[in-house]
Image (cartoon, rainbow, N blue to C red; front, side, top):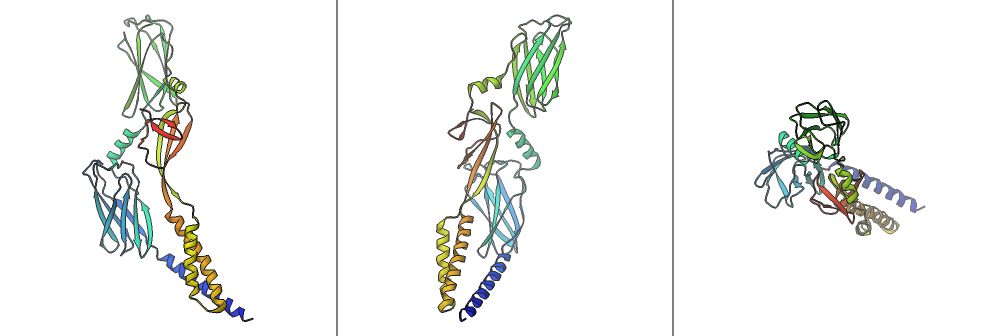
Length: 346
């Protein structure tokens, strides 16, 4: 019966500890706003100014993907932090580089991602357009019933959808606009005029324009259809174009190191509580609780970055490969997948 008061005391102690843990968790710092003064270009010498509003009396910093420097923010007034960073020649900061802020108060830390773009709206749109995949023509065919006045020539182009396609003929001053009959499929029919000077050897030039980018193909009117994508697919099964490059944060799996370290610390703490059977029970509870805390700490610390590269292969399939380091690739860039990695194929 003497064990019952001891167990009651242990349960009361555990409840008190849990209440203390809940109160501790409520004191975690908070980031209310995180902003940047947007700039027109990300060139060496450009200064980026960051501002953060959150819990007062803390230590704030910013990490900018593409730069090895950690940007420290100073608390200019209670809860208001500010700091700046000047881009150097060594930096590889891009218009879409992830930016994160960290705020640490009394040993506790919270993080927030920047919700703005680094560039101004117009500059960001221009950067997006520049980074967009290059337009492609997958098929270019012509079929003529004849080449003198009154004959018809059927024209067909397949490629990037949502584009504008026009065609010119050597021996004619006509500029023929093709209509997109379905996504990526453009067609038109041209009736030869009496003043045109066409033959089976006359060159037809197809121009496909998407955004600010243009691609052209040429063929003789009587030549077989051109299918450049098919030719590339047949010559290189592992070649393609980068669709996206994403940075992901991988949370590490906790190992035994954190559990053992936490368990030892908990057992030492438990050794200071109670006497006799109570001390033994406290040691056990302390060891278990400490091991759990140690494993949680290790899980949060053991984080790593992975770079996921999504590639559209020439056969139309999409494949995603992972890199442990920045592969230095951009959207629209030709690549080849070698040993599970995407490498430039310019």
